[in-house]
Image (cartoon, rainbow, N blue to C red):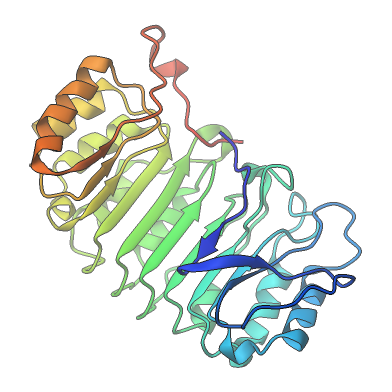
Length: 315
């Protein structure tokens, strides 16, 4: 699977593409949409900060609630440092900004594991009232430990996530965080975190308001499932997501033999390598209790070993 479509919404608002310089399109009310600002990935005649300056001149930014940063010029070769600088420099002009996504880039613009990123916590420092933050692309991604009192949702989408980023998030003080969604990826594209790096999330001692935990798109999904099966944090979760990775019968067996999960609203295991018999066992154990169980997109064909498994998103 690749990222073939742009975000359709962010912060609960429909996404709207800010038009290019030649367009004469009517603009919606500033607060009614999540504004996506993009430039051409290849041979762009306008740099992203210039497009943002046009946006700031055309829209009452004091009313903007959500921004989506789409492609910047040559994202496969250039970091978004100037994008981040433009945004942080405009923080006083964006007092109502609550949702921000950095890198809404499809595979046609730049494959996810080719997207160059940078240190992103400056955005959290600049926007103290931000409630939802997402970033796509793991190459060069930095996430230093940060304190933020309002952030409710953090999403990091990668084909390979560096352990330093996982540790930076784990060391952060995010007292309001309710949703954490990490796409861990594969070692082919830089993933090097192990289960021990996830322990701060699983122990339940941090992130006191966490209700939705997604540790997915991982080549060590069985090992993660084993750790999750006994993790104290599970007791207070509503949604547990171990999807998009290499989960097989060993990981699923651990989930069945571990702590009860019948309190969950949803257990998402889609894109998996479990046998039909194991899928049935999970269904028998959880569905009657009211758990929404997603075991769609089975990749198991009865042949091959763990070395033949793959994550849903890689390159």
